[in-house]
Length: 290
Image (cartoon, rainbow, N blue to C red; front, side):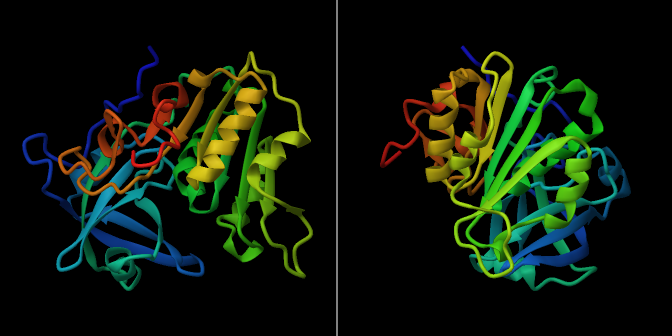
């Protein structure tokens, strides 16, 4: 059976006090697109900051007293330890309150939690990353890992789409990624007068190139409807289900599988995921009420 990729690296939580946050300071907060921003955090304890490490695809629980806690994927470079980046969409009380924070404000942090992209296990393979909208931040650490170890991978393709050109994240980094031999394909659902690129949904980009099913692995994150069709296109090209990895972010509340909000069949997304081999969750994926 395909196993889930759990991290063995140090965490900013005590194994005896899993629900107690460690305190971090906001070092920067910048708007990326409308209603979406990146907040950079640094632990107040220098030793904790120095020892903190995460794997691409993991998430932290961010806590604001009086507002609550939210699970947010880590979007920064795993090899840069000076601060931890989280790209956040302001859609609820917690995330809106985080968006109003200023440099020097304090926030509670627990993590990192969850399974990760098995990027080191995939060395030697062609890699296809497919993201939609806010699904790119959980994949960006994997992109950074590939950039640091580019010679260890074959062909690397990033498919990324958003509703409109103004909804695209990290566009200022795409040229650097292309210069490092990552084929970045970008599309939007609705173009405007400024857009000269492709129009259409992410899965349609599969028809622009050929994949070698014997070598290729797929990692995808975004709206579940997009993931469903990315998986469909990958399977149609005979890429094995155990080499297709999906990241789900379903209603994660506690990060420990205690509350049950994120249950998917026999799994808790916050504890057993968020990254799953598709072969593991195939019986439950897309099934209503799961």
